[in-house]
Image (cartoon, rainbow, N blue to C red; front, top):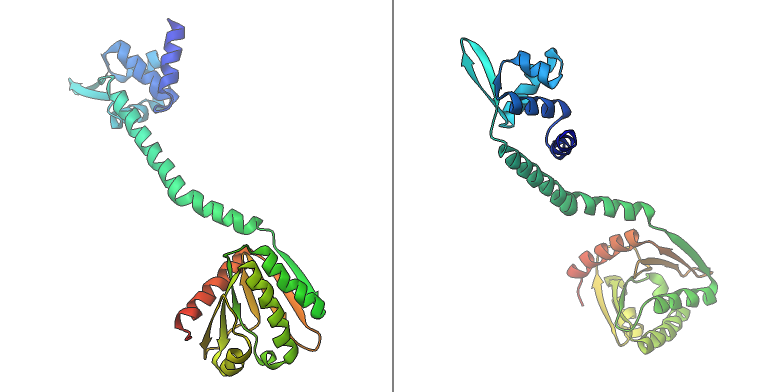
Length: 255
């Protein structure tokens, strides 16, 4: 019999505290009683009995009647336990749904941001510049595209014109597309020397981060000074930021 009682109380521990279970079981046996016999039967402190009974009343498991100005408590229908358990299960389901839909996505996003491995590589000289641009082509696959905030005054240099002639030949062979933004100031030089198949160029009068390539979780910054250099940063977060900025400017730029 004792083993059966233990199993029953274990089943109730999800919805009632240990003291509440003792008092409730005591009332089931006594049927109706003042607090004295309940305390004796349930083996709970006198100082806590009313608090326990109040909690059981709130849960619909205890009711009382007044006889000769004295409260007599009695256990309510045990089927009320099913309603309490159902309410708890519904609440748990809501909490799980909230976690899945609201909390976990935020945590995952923050975790990705904090654990993202960022890498930076520097390329120098004309050979290094070629290697850096080939890195773009090797990172992308046929049908992919990259975005560029085009360089400024260096567009007029013959070595730059020749360099991009070779680069775009390799790009076209690989079937990679490009969207480029140039400052309106350089429209004539761009239209004369930098128009190639598989690219779209737009012009804007707005200032922009010139010499910036945006491609598949990477940013590349180029400098065409006397000693050319390229600085490639692998960072999804920076990539998304620059991509969004580019798309905003692209919408207002003109072909």
